[in-house]
Image (cartoon, rainbow, N blue to C red; front, side, top):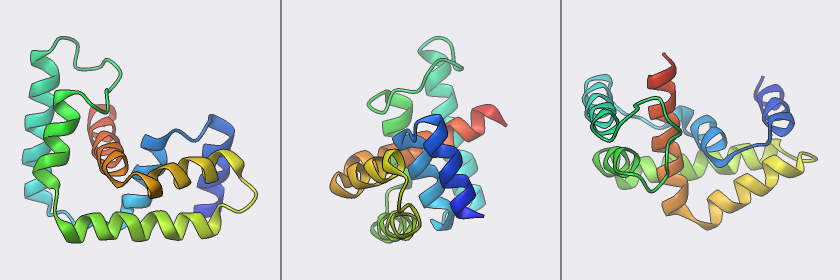
Length: 124
């Protein structure tokens, strides 16, 4: 199943947000904490204009969400998820490149993960 998702990402361009979101599937965040943090991030987006515009990894909504959810254990879980994906991404150069970038830049990986959560909320 994961390999099929990675192959789909390879076809679509394997952006860091999608890869980080997939890698973060096992990051433990309580439902109440996540819901409240996402609600505040969506409000930040709305105060800046169109809440459905493209998410900026350095924008207020993404950085605020990343900051609220930031815990050492969660970052470790994201890193573990990226490592698991890396083992399954052999032969998928775009995915391998995105994973490599995220593994080399943990701050970017964490913001990309937060952006993925926010994008999922907006799409939901």
